[in-house]
Picture 1 (cartoon, helix red, strand yellow):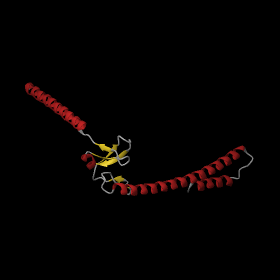
Picture 2: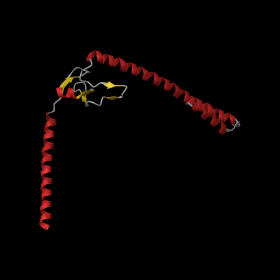
Picture 3: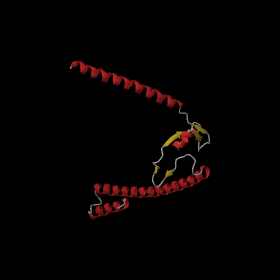
Picture 4: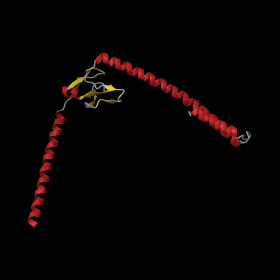
Length: 167
């Protein structure tokens, strides 16, 4: 049962009670039922408008996909979105990249990152990927890990020596 059917059912129940129309409580109940009925019609109209807008957005999305295909072709380094799967393909990693020129975000695959850059699909500006800081961070983390491992080994050796001395 949709909203309008449910309101009609409630109106029928109220009418079936054969309440005294002159009592204030009955007037309030009838006014509430009228209000609910108006709201149900408004909700139904909004649902129709939302459905129409969703259909228009789907059409725009399809048109945009055609334009992107014309501009970039199949193998442009950008991730392809499979609408039926409602997800990106799982066989490859994808990354969000923000263009420094237009500040818009696009999704690229790992190959585009390895190449070191690409042109922004929105403004055409070149987006370069600089991993030098990342490499420095990785080196620092590896060095810290080595130091921590060395300390852990020293402590383990000390505990072993202490147990040996106790015996």
